[in-house]
Image (cartoon, rainbow, N blue to C red; front, side, top):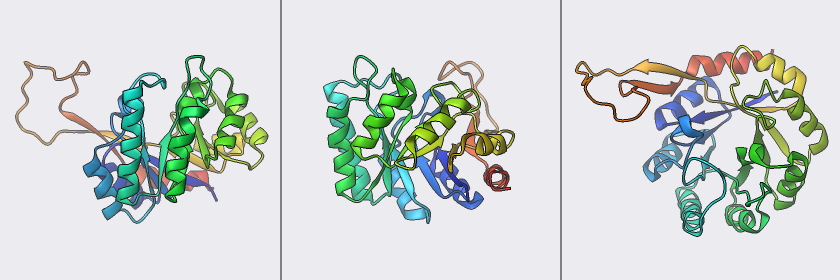
Length: 246
């Protein structure tokens, strides 16, 4: 059986993921910039309303995965908040100046979560590392449960060959979870080609705001999409899961 994790950008998306049959959600915010840590309110509400496990992204800002001392302290506080909320796990990753896994900084964060009984997924900082094979071994050494990856490419389809290679090298020592542009049109091929058993998708659709009044004289961000919302679609989750296991 193929396990499907849904990257949920809100509590609404998380509930849709659960309804669609996802085995787990990764709760985050700001997916348009790769995701950051969601609000404490969403973390608490996810724990309250979800029957499936929720993993929380620990990423203090968009951009690279090299963090200042202050950002590192924020990550510690956020992990403690996740522990207090009683969530199932965290998703985290840090690189050093040279694009290597920063084991010295990652280990305290991973140990903090593990000692509290949480699972740990290494995030797509892995895809930004300078050597995926060395990064794989470093992450295994750190004790992570899985690696989220597009095979160091923009999408899982582009990186499918690399993902298949990683699955083979990992040899069940750690789970390799493909991510990046996974949908109902490519999931079957990715399952067949990569040999992975867990997959990660947002399964989102863009919906229009319910507001009748639109102020078209102002932009709150550069996208100009103040009156649209991206949310996970339960039916898309069901379809992707069905095709993954067909």
